[in-house]
Length: 219
Image (cartoon, rainbow, N blue to C red; front, top):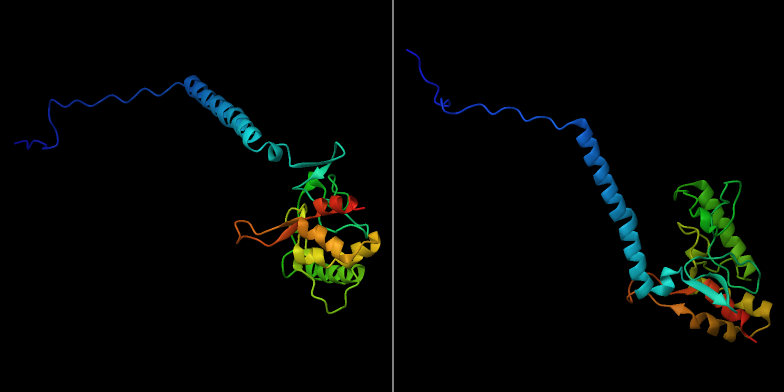
């Protein structure tokens, strides 16, 4: 006597296996998907965001360019190197030449940092050298505290700002080089002071380029 299988029914027929999609069809679908996403993400989205920012934030969309006398002299968001005694000096920069042949501070074409860790002896030595140089060029005593941003480079090497503390420590040097009253130089710096973002984020800072342009405009 044959015992019927409870899971089998004579009316149930096995379904044939689906026919595999031909390779040319798969390739066609892949190319179409790649083309679609290239158009949407690589062309449509950038054009849309550029158009929107151009309307809502035209100055920022054009690079936050700073002009003087009808000529572009820099950008408010990219630092420049100032070394003359009459200028406010920015943060150290570890950027190098585009071809990597040597250092070139504030090279916007090769943004980057030293990548030295906190325990790296090169970092410690360079910071100590910068502290001594900062005190010497600004006529400060050996015990004067030096703000950290005055002796350390930013991750980009293009930081356009310095802290208020760093700027104020340079007032005497700038005033002496320009033969201006100390109070007048400090006034210019404080007029270009930017507060903490939303009142709580970051520190008070001044834009180095903006201050130097304003100092050049003093008579």
